Image 1 (cartoon, rainbow, N blue to C red):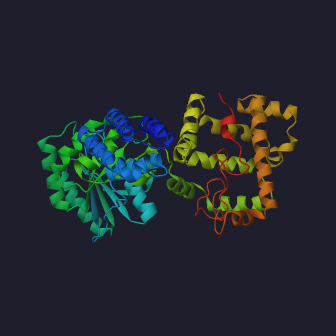
Image 2: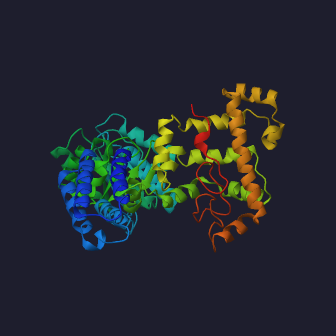
Image 3: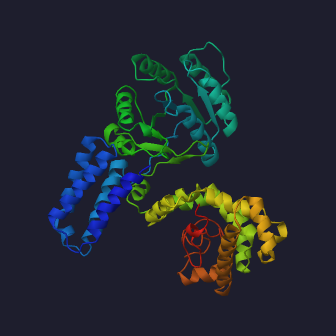
Length: 485
């Protein structure tokens, strides 16, 4: 969502890095451009003023202007200020330290994604924290709102409070508390009603529900695509309800991102979650330092490694590791890696998280390259027979025509895929010559790539999680050369 802001700031800092010594005027000119970029990104004016003044004061200091790398020093100062603006170094977590059932009350305007976010957080609590959760819809105004939460509950495997027609929100909240205690529920999520705009009736209803349920967390759900309106809504709610955090939805959209940058500064409340898509697992804990790194084009390798660890199946990783040790790599292995890339969010998501990949991502977009590339490659492999997948050398001219026709592609596309596989296969043989993954790790120092994903240099993915084609690393081919359609 920060693409345009990131591009603008990237241009400003490229100019600074390109100069040796910096004069005070150089810094002030750069900060003027930063100011314009933030305002165009829809960041609140008071927040921009405070941010620019703070950065300028530090950046024009003699220790920066006379340092060996003044440009890099300024970028670091901006990065630190961005982290502070977004909430500081600490990652805000849900406070579940109370006797169960711990109540989380979800509030916000109608259409902000409150019900969907409730189900996503419930799924997160169940799967990552091992909590027994239950959801209850208190929305008696919007048609089928309670039924929607029930359906979402079935999809994510979380219990919902049975619907009784005619009950008011306070009655539903009372019944939800009783039911949660009887069923030994750890966390109870209350999905309150929304309105098209903030009104007194809405606030009174939320206060009444809060008095009954005594929520440990009151999370405000706002749509990040609404920009400054989202900030205004947050101000209205924080003045009436004791908020503990914010959930920003639709962070995967193409808006300017000002809501995220303004929210903490304006409300004083931490952003705890970011919704990144429509799927039930498309929600992330909001890490200020990681978001700041993405904005400044520094990538987010930690999130990338975490996403890989979630997406890569241990059995598949171990099986591929054994094959790599033997120098083997067939079309089935390539297909597995392509699917892992899709599970991790596709090419755009991966490129955005890799350091220094900002320009590569832009080049991919300009060439019309998108995640359909992965689907086309998968279709080509799917059109091969099991014997051909195990031994690609069998693919003669006649077989290639059959595979191309079966996958809806051209013979040249099949040839590109085969070339890509051949390059990766050579890389696997090289790894075998180096003594396998352990030998390769030894070249990078103790514990370097051992048990990590080749090409990423990260840790903690389990043994030999497998490389990602086109994301760098020794012997890895460039995916952008494939299927530019």
